[in-house]
Image (cartoon, rainbow, N blue to C red; front, top):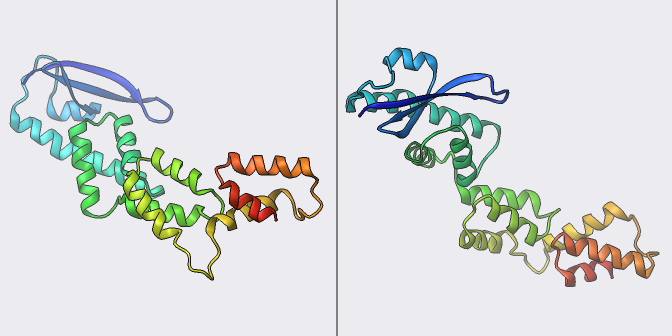
Length: 209
């Protein structure tokens, strides 16, 4: 394996930190910093043995990928798709990302089912089911898994309040403290506004009655 190119680029929020994309046999291999290049004595046309390649991957690249992922998760929970996107933005290869995701799943640092359940519990009193579904699908939650979690989270007994009814009532109260005096036009505008937010039309009308 031969180093065929070393390309410098600026990374970080301010794009001021120097990093180097290392290409081996014309394929992008990994991102390193100046101290790494010095440590491993890397330069264009240098041969990279399998032993050296594995050492760079395990001791530097994979280690940093795990650190990066854990730092992201420290601030807030993420879906698998969101974390993969973050790692791609940090210039990690698909192989390193897959290995990192497997590591995180092994310790339950990421769990899409847990994420979706927590998200629904947090949002179901203010957002429509449709909006919640759309947002979670965009975050990469599997559709079948999502339907199963929604069925559980929205399963109400006869004495329970439907979470979406509660959400509609809260949305109405944000605009109007008392809807008893609303004229026809304002009521239609309110219905349209709630419907655009993804709430069920039948439930909107029921709340307004």
